[in-house]
Image 1 (cartoon, rainbow, N blue to C red):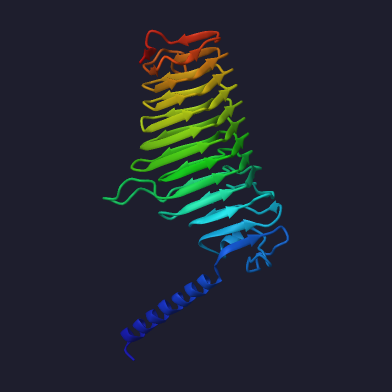
Image 2: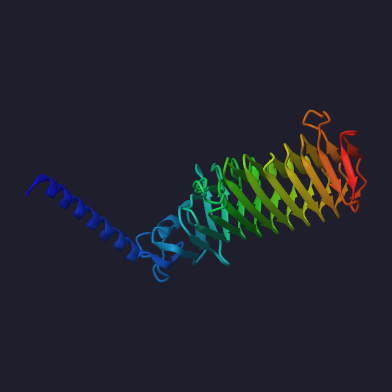
Amino acid sequence: MPRTNLSAHARTLFVLAALLLFCAQAAQAAPQTFVSAKGDDANPCAHASPCRTFAGALAKTDFGGELAVLDSGEYGPVTINYSVKITAVGVFAGITAFDADAVTVKPSSGAVVALRGLTLTGQGGAHGIYYDGPGAARAGDPKEPSATLHVENCTISGFTVNGIYFYGNGSLLVKDTTVRNNDVYAIELTAPADEKVRAAIVNSRLEGNHAGLFAHSDDLIEVTVRDTVAANNQGTGFAATSEGVRMQLQNCVSANQHAGVSAAQGARVTVEGCALTNSKYGIYVTKEGVARVSGTTVTDNEVGVANLDFNGVVTYGHVYTFGNNRVFGNKQETEGKPSLIVKQF
């Protein structure tokens, strides 16, 4: 037989073998899998024969499937690359990270990942959740977020960097979650050039970190925060830095930190119906930052509203108000005049 025919025959056999292997793996994957503290990763991860770790069960969970926790236990760090739900209801489902991230999400385009009811603890690990988006849109495609991460009813604490780090194209939805005692940020959002982040944070608590929510971007970040508390952080409760950031705060509380809300480098922050108290600065704008404030109470701070850089020098920023706020009872109501601009309309 000619050599060229042998090569073609070998290639055909290789393709057939790869297809058979893929089909065998697909046949083993299930739409719903289970983990248990008494399980074994050698099991098929069915309800009657669960796996022991999230990583072991994920390998046997179909695309778009669900991985459910049967009983309380530690289930180990996991990396997620495709659409899947990891769900724990009424049990303790822990991941303790000693030298890595607890959950790494590197999704394919269009993937939807949901994490519900998890307790993520850092014992030397860098991030509770590390999201690395699928990258910039292709030429000609709309620059819209292309993957989604849901974080619901989780507790994330003790990491050496961030509780949640969200980087690159995608949407982040955080609900009923506590992020506390992390060395840098509770939640950090960043969008590289030509990428876009959308985020919504609802009914959550950001406590005891270096700072609470920090959004900065080479490109566009749109983030809405509702009914959320940022307290006892060393830095700022809600911080927006760089021109691409648009942040909306509704019915939020910020207390006992360096600044309640800050806007810098052209970022725009809308503050509606919030309470900003017991901090060095209630609202802090600097270097073209813009704050639009309505129905908000700013009280018991060293300075209610400030327009300064970090060295105490007056900078150009704007605070726009509807005239229905309550800025009172601060040691100094405003600082940074005459560059501080307060408009009533």
